[in-house]
Length: 198
Image (cartoon, rainbow, N blue to C red; front, side, top):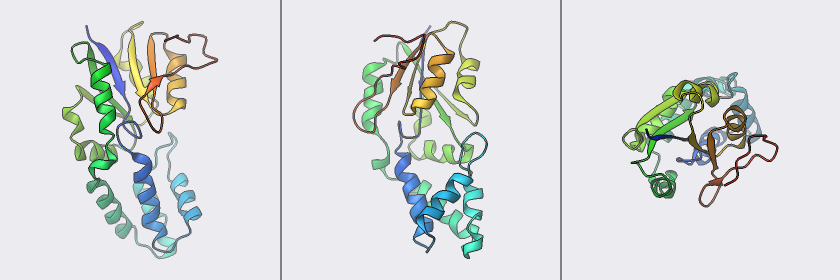
């Protein structure tokens, strides 16, 4: 049986930080103070910390900016993502580290479903992964649904908070953290009683 390899999307495979910057600039360039735009972005997040783009776009009506106008600009940002936003070197790293003959590639991403689908479609990532799972809750629960009790698996993610939750929830997890630059490396949670050396 192949080992499951869970790979994050945002800021692991795609440069989402740059997308967020373009989103903020889209509104700021229309005369809204940048700190206000950032505040509205944070306020648009749901209880799971996912920014809801329709809520974000509608929040600038009070500044005389129509939600439809912003939504059109946002759609353009997602549909016109250039190849530079894809961390292609990370895909190469995955192939080198995790042979497909031994690993089942699963894209596990947390976010607003329609937005995540746009990102995935733009870079044809469905064809790269054996399975794609978009979740709106926590990743630990999603992983628990996909593995057997005691099954070992690997996860590659850029968020320490996500990896910390996984490290506490599963003893059989091999965790890789993705730095801003360079190749992913084994993640070790110093205070994790199940800490794995490696």
